[in-house]
Length: 202
Length: 202
DNA sequence: CCCGCTAAGTTGACGGCGTCAACAAGCTCG
DNA sequence: CGAGCTTGTTGACGCCGTCAACTTAGCGGG
Image (cartoon, rainbow over all chains, first blue to last red; front, side, top):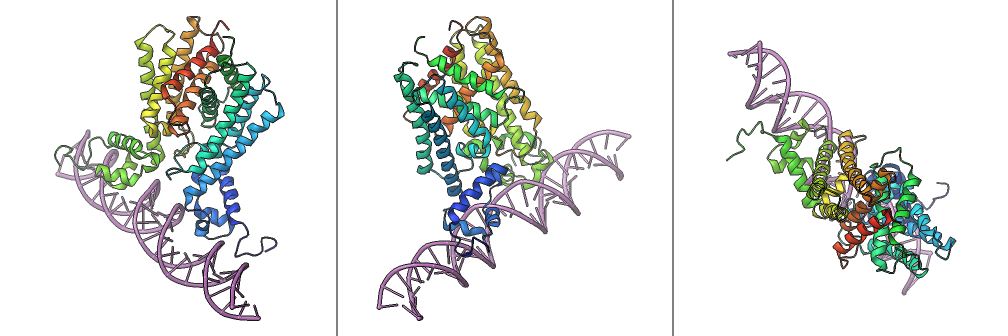
């Protein structure tokens, strides 16, 4: 009653739903997100969300898409910080990528993984994921232009790099890697192996 | 009525549950597996499974563990086929790994991904996954002994390789890679980048 | 100014789910 | 043969997602 007044028409329920769903995901994983619980938390009825999202799947897709956007922003920031493809840029990109996953495991899991998202083609999600991939391609191309790595198909190279960091992130957040292992050393090993494998000198 | 006779005591319901769950996973994904549906298919009541598995999560864990075992067997077979670490062994291991994921996407998704498996520590699952990892370490070590790759911490190198193939497999089965891309070329690019990055000559 | 239209939220209901407790049927072994 | 253990069944509970019918709030035109 203090601020959110205009109780009935909620102001911006859509944004609140997205925020609350994201919070719940990072608390208890995607499976803890429930249309009914989300309503309870926002002091709104169970089916209020259906005025803003076709179904639960659509809500989760929107949250996942926001995750892709955030991750892409972070990767862009790394590129902007050290503009001209210093040799240490790729390791840094790798570290930012993996750290994002480790800090938001539930969110990251949702972004990949069709499991929670039954709906067929969600073009919105595909687009934001592609935007992330395009950013990786751009980084690869800047390395090619500076002559650091071989000039092969940049898409293939970007897929390989993406796979390596995504795989590492995934193994880490699923607990497949012994906790005794030093995460930073693992990230460095991955990025340097990648870079050596793509080097131009051969 | 024809064969499975002895209707009441089902013979080997436990094995039947595992097989049926695995089949359902590969048909409609983990989310299509339901204690009630599995019972219907086996002509058994909904809660019969609870005599053999503590809960749904335990059943899924057992299925996932069987998947890890199958995958490890396949990787071992590659090693057995060409015993002494020919240079083409690693690419072959990579291809077998990724193909396994592509052929059993639902199963592979279940093996990784805590999402469907709420239960805390499932030591059984951890062990079988570790057995798979040990196989990878063994392969790395045989490469080290033949002098093909640098003699660094074989665990770190194995994690990097595992991450790369797991990441590629994951991106493929989640549909993150444009379908126009040639999967075999992508696998080759990944394994050769990996091998070049680990090469001894530098 | 008010009246009706639409957008936003609510409530009741339905069927499906996982799981527990109480029960029944079949097997095993003394 | 019968007691006890194992295996399977049934009923019930409380969740869940979602739809249909309803109510309320706000807005724009007369």
